[in-house]
Amino acid sequence: MKKFAGNLFIGIIYTILYAPLLVMVLFSFNESKSTANFTGFSLKWYNELFSSGSSMEALKNTLILAVASAVIATVLGTMAAVYIYYIRNKAWRGTVNLVTNIPMMNPDIVTGVSLMLLFVFIGRLIGATNSLSFGTLLIAHITFNLPYVILNVLPKLNQTDPHLSEAAQDLGSTPLRAFFNIVLPSIMPGIMSGFLMSFTLSLDDFVISYYTTGSDFQTLPLKIFSMTKKTVKPDMYAISSLIFVTVLVLLLIINIAQIKQMKKDAAKKN
Image (tube, rainbow, N blue to C red; front, side, top):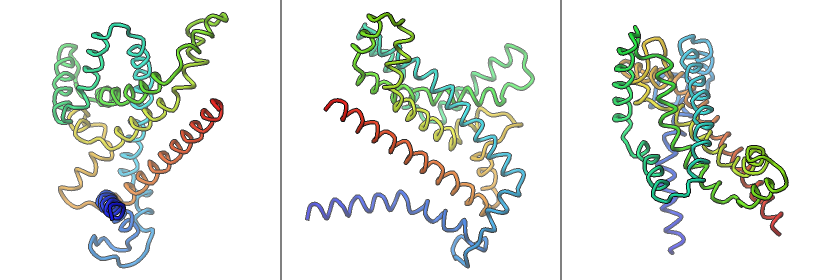
């Protein structure tokens, strides 16, 4: 009875989480614009999506921003995680960890407004004509992605055997070479998880992007928001469905790779 109740509860939770996504994917293949009646299967909205210049431009901007911010945040976050890992002073380490967690606890609107005020203030100091641009949007995305990368990499560093790096250095390797040859491969799953989380967070961010972007750069979430004032066309269902499937496939690939790596590590220990 307990097992049945537990499975029923989990089933309800997953239904609540994924039913909206499944409905969106279903109606992206709807022949008509109706969001209440499925009149027939059609690829009409996918064809319209790829022939729409504004939609594809917004998608291109979103992907460029997501990839650039994820790559930079992953590099900086990994460096920050390594620094935190090697801190020996417990009080200082605790303080750094606390400061790292604060951006994740902040509401997005607080982060967005504060970054906007900072960028406008600096822009006026340097005499910039446009204080907000792609550069400010990129910095904002890197800022809120960093803590997630750090929190994905740190556990992997804690699981790494420090004696392996020390042994490599005893055999004549430099600390930098020992890090790239020994430590980096062992924490790569955490780095990839941090990159994927940064990519997905940047991909669907709206609030922070709304306050920190300029008038000459529009991402997909901003375009969809502008459409809600009138009507959201079904081609937006199509593009959202493509993004959902892409992220799902990436998650599956990374999870499968991590499982294989865990099996290899377990086999080596045995």
